[in-house]
Length: 412
Image (cartoon, rainbow, N blue to C red; front, side):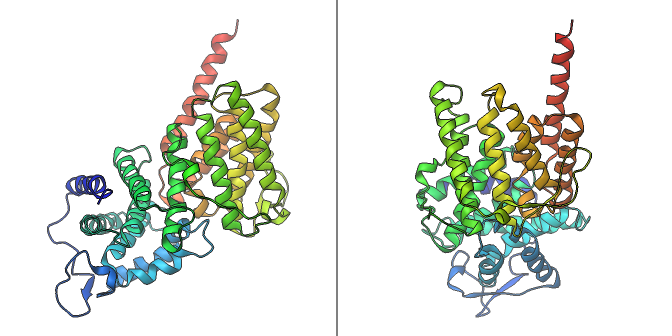
């Protein structure tokens, strides 16, 4: 199998680093229906039955309420909230992936303040790796992609720039390509594809590099007059991905690139014109001392789509360098709108993939007070979700210090 060697190597390396206890969880949390020892990688036929403990039952329930909603931000079918829990009951691989992901969230977020969950997370993670290594040896194993996606989301809690995360991400890219999973796929494959795309986007923004999977290969198709918020959200991600490839690619600073930027500005405004006012959001209350005003969205997908719409504008106006002095007030307007969304009822599902968007808002917004507000939002993201934002905040603070030094050095 073409996609197996790299991923298997990644997961074996991770297992060697875990220092797991000798007694495996295998057998403690599920039993085969027949009562005999399970053969390992053949659980996809429903031959096994999960035996729940109070702890694992709690984790499965917590999964649906918390991290599963992150995965389904642009999926109104709620695949990870509805379909995956059904599959978990017959798949030890998915069972341990879900338990690992949820326990890790509970260990790192403010919701529990209980570091003992980290031990549980590591045990389930280790078992997930063992089962996934077996699964990758089976051609077209139906749960390997979903399991890999859950474990990648587990690892993003730590550090996006870590070597472990990057190697897993690259292996997952090979899996996506070799199995020809695209926007034309269906069911869990389609859900996994768009989750993978969100990982692609945050990796590209963090590294300031083009995406690995070219948007031309996504096989997207859009319907004029579309009203579904999840589809519209994925549409704006497709525009954003192509913008990232432009600004961080060879034409990011060329005249040809400037023309393409104008085309993208027109394209995203055409996307915007098809939306209702309630989709874009309704402001409420008075502006605060920094000029921010809260905004209401009927559904989280609409808030997420609006968030990335504004980020796309900032990238086109100001990255990797300011395109025109006339854009400065427009950049400020977009940064303000981004922060308006973030100070409102900012759903955790949007928080997790918002960090690098907030980075550009904080980088370009004027005024130390406004910048500090966004730093505090980033700190709140880590507090609520366990997603590491400390590195991003420190980088933003360093940029402010460097800018202050440049200004003082240029003074007579």
